[in-house]
Amino acid sequence: MGVYLVINCYIFIRLYLTLSGFRVLRTVACGALALFALSFPIGRLLAGRAPQMLVNAASFMSALYLSPMLYGFLLTLLADAMRIINNVIAITRLPPPYPAKARLCAVSSVFITSVIITLAGVWNANNPVIVKHQLRRDDFPNTAGGNFSLRMALLSDIHLGQLTGPRYLEKLVSLVNDASPDIVLILGDTIDSQGFFRDEAKKTEAMNLLSSFKSKLGTWAVMGNHDYYAGHADVEDFFAGTSVRLLIDKAEILDGKFVLVGRDDRSGEYYRRARKSISDIVSPIISGDGAVSHPLIVMDHQPFGLGDAVGRGAILQVSGHTHRGQLFPINFFIAGIYEKSYGLYKKENTHYYISSGAGVWGTPVRTVGRPEVVIIDLGEKAEDN
Image (cartoon, rainbow, N blue to C red; front, side, top):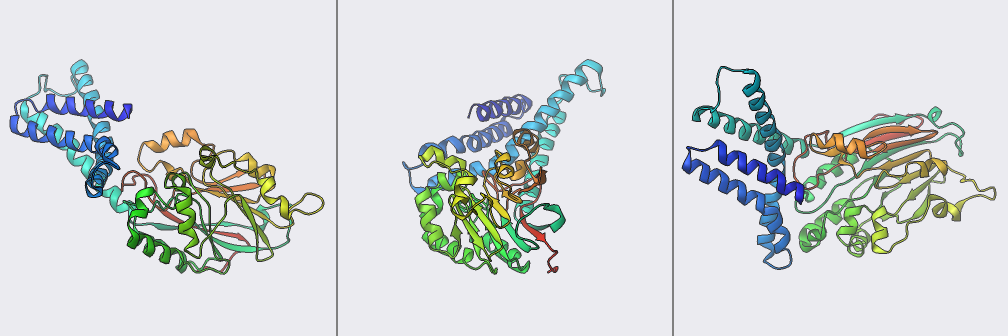
C-alpha cells in the first residue's frame, strides 16, 4: 500500500505541475486520476460494509487502473529523466521552462502509450495458447516402471472470479479437449476470492465446465494460495460438485503406471493445516525397500523448495503461481525470487515445469507471456493431435 501511495502521489504531482496553464483540463485530469487511484483502497474499505454492486464497481475500476498506472509511472519517470538530461547537456534546443504545447504533448504521449499497452495486454490476456513440450523416456534415467507414455494437460492460476468467468473457462476447456490428453492437472488458484461464490449462476456454470474436460485418467487438482484466501472449505465443496478430484497431501496410482502426488499449498500452514512431506504422502504405497514402484509426478502450486521432489526421486513436478510476472517489468523481480519462475527446468534427474498460468490476477492485463494451456508428452511420443 505504501508503494501504491508513493507511485500515485508522484504521478499526481507531475500531472498537476505539467498541466499548469490548462485549468479545466488539469482539474478534469487530476480528478479522474484521483478517482481511479482511490478506487483500490475504497473498494477494500467498503467490502462487507456497502452494497455489493458498489464494492464491485470500485474493485473493477482499480483492476482496470493498475496497468495504465504502472506504465504511466514508468513513462513519467522516463520523461523526467530525459528532462533532467536535457537540462544538463541540451539534447534539444528547447530550454526550460517548457512551453504549454510541449508539456501538453508530453502528457498526451504518456497517456496514449499507457492506454495502448493496456489494451494490447487485455487482448493478450483473453487469448490463451497451447504450449507443447516432449520429455522422452531417455530423459528419465533409472526410472521405475519400464516404458511409459502419458499426455498431460496443465492448467494453473485460472482465478475464477470478477476478472475471469465461465466464458473464458469455456475457451480453456475447448483448448484442452482439442489436445486429447490422457490426464488433466489443475495446479491451484482455481478460485480467485470469496466473491466468486456470491454468484450462484456463474458458480454452477463453472462447475459444469470443469466437469466437461475429456481425458482417460480424469481431471485432478491441488489447492493454491488464492483457494485458501477464498475459503478452503468452500473451495473443497466446489470441487466436490464437479468430476475433478482434489488431492490435498494425497497420492494416487494412475492406470497402474504412475503415482500422482498432490501437495497441499504452503499457505495452508497459516490456516493450521500442516503440510506433509512427499515421503509422508507416498508412504502408504511404497514397496518394502522404501521405493515407489511407479514413476512419480508431483503437483505443487508454488515452486518453492524444488529439492523436495528431487529427494523423493520424482520424474516431474508441475507448478504455477508465478504468472511469469504478468506485467513488464515485474517479471524481472519474479525471476529473482524463484529458483525457476517459468518454463522447463531440470534439477538432477527431476524435471520441472512452472506455468505462466491460464488466467490473470489483479488486473485483466498481461504484458509478459501468454496465458497458456500446457501439453506435456511424457515417455514415448504421443500422436500429434
